[in-house]
Image 1: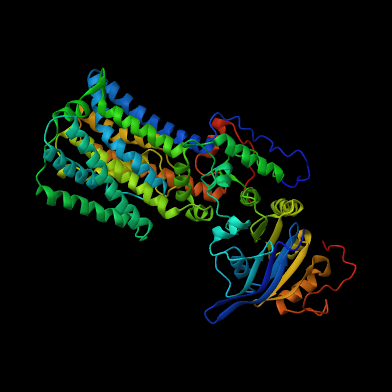
Image 2 (image 1 turned 45 degrees about the vertical axis):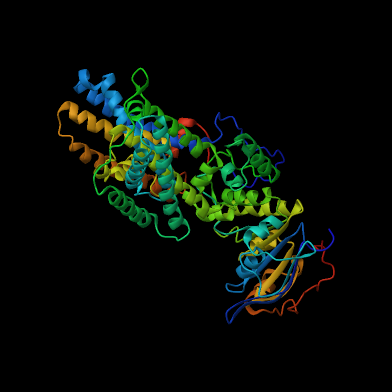
Length: 263
Length: 370
């Protein structure tokens, strides 16, 4: 993989006089999980909305697969291969798994829906992701557990050939076993060569699944590096104060030389 | 259930497409609700049949009930689509009258009692209905005025304009061929042409709602418009199309109504909208959007007309029909709300799916939501 999948250069975002983001330089590599952490109001949501085309950055540029990109609408970002799975998932409870996954990308046979092909496509994607807990893909999504719903939302994103999947607090509403399911799924995405950007409050989850860490504090990126360079204490320091005595430095901590996680 | 994610055999355990109809659960849900309402209708029919076997269960009488229901059923197809999106269309009765009035004027201007005038009338009626439907849809989807208000407004406007055009006096310029075939004719034996036309429209509606992309999007919007938007659907355009279709069908119903009554029935359609909405809701379509079926609506519409007919035959004042239908309507919405509440509480399956599972013996184990 030559060069990172997504490069952010000097990204800033103002809402009137309020500066929500400033000077964000961040590389998101393919095939790795980059966790974006920060306290409430640090700018995590603003940053992912900027990447996913909900709004354009006020400053800086987004370089997608080596080329400058302007995502004016979420559709632009999706078409480019950036899929965002929001916390609310945006699934239709009354539709079944297949219908949800192919909503907006239906396969037709003449005027009618080609249900067989749609079902095969959905099933293939789910089995590629080893989502084995769903017993019947004709179940309505309203009948699924939280982890299964998350899996369906991710599978929907992946099915559309996403190269980067941004996940906003995917485990926030889940119990222990469901969280394990989702974290496992995230790891599998990365192993398939997809870049994953994970927004999470839960440092336990982050340390379990992430390859890289990026810490936001008051709208600025205070630290980024392989996850092995951090521990829970230093990450918490960075998230709450913007610096950490324990890591010794606040910026670009490529500090531990024997880190084996670089990749 | 969870966690054994390392097991390589990837096939979801029982996710075989063995179901004969892949629309699966949604269709089954609709079918189940249709089944319940068929039972209610059957009970009513059996009751009347037992009380007055000689006069209720005659071909002539059944034919009358079917004919009475046909025009409402055409409106019911559009109404079901509208209510599945979570909207409402109060204007159907007025649009029916307006379209009938303009069609009548057009046919009178053409003159003649033949098919030429009748077909022109049909086209004019459909175009008028489509126009009102587009007005409804654009105001609802683009100007974001609530459907209740928009269609209440066009209810008044369409009826008012119909009265302006006619001076409030019903027009009766209906070609005889149209009356004799569409209005009163039978296609074969004792099967009314009107009912066959309605059945064709119902069949097209069922395919549209349950088998096409249009139908899938309609269900999606009724459940979660935001999901539709993020999936790339053009939500406003779809809504406009749904209301336009409802208007178009109301226009066509205006033409059928002309054929049947040989009159524009200006004063006679004030509660048509409510009858259609009641039938739709009784038939299992949820006023909250997302669930419903056209078959259910059609059966739901038979309940008021059967009651009306039966009460006359057994000698009860037919006014009781309104009382009974009102009660059935409230009961239907109550049941719908209970299902929704149960779904929210249990976090489990929406609606009757516990029962549904037992009946269809699928998805034996679904974990409770965390």
